[in-house]
Length: 291
Image 1: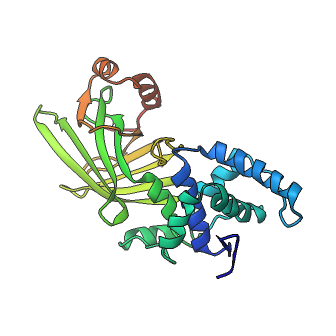
Image 2: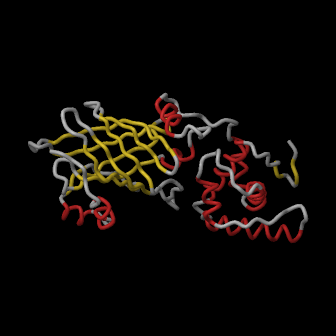
Image 3: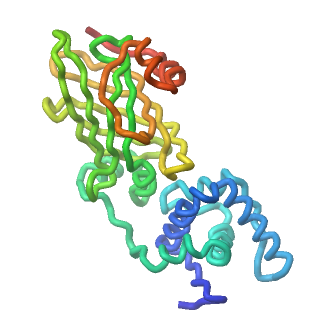
């Protein structure tokens, strides 16, 4: 290993790219991605003025955000960017990158199931590997909102866990509601999340009946506090045996406290949830359903 000024040489290998992306996320709670971009650009300009060996890089927050948040196969159309960012981290924020350099394995672990690799090959045949970074950003607890299938005017609040044990692609949804006869029902959805393009496909089924429970989430902004996805908006497709399939708008928010699974009338929901206006506006897109 060659080193200059105690800085490990950047070799452009997948492991080095993964280390750089992980270091940016490690630093993000203290220095936002936008601020990182500004500081890297200013640092490179200063170094370029003082050294012929360094070329300044023009870097805005969108370029850096794309580099950091996309999977390890995405590099950049600016070959100097990762090299300069590597040196910037080791010179100015060594604490964020050096532990990763010492501990990150040469190969990231793939998901330990057969479903996600098969679906990934079908949905993204040109992608070399599963977007493990997207699954890492997805991991955590969420409150999920959708219209009730009993009374579409009501709003069902479900809890979702993304990333179960050692499988970052597994998710579990819990829901509670009263059926057509007013009897309380508790149901669970088990499934797998498959990142593709800028979206995530959630391929699930009801634990009790095996009924497909499938939804796609897009519009996945990052949470500045957790560094993961803060929310997602999409469409749910459900098809119970003996009925025509139905489609509903569905939206999720990262949960900062435990989620109570419950169905709310519109006025109750307005009273209980601070973000009721934004959520109900999205859910108002309409349903496709038959009763």
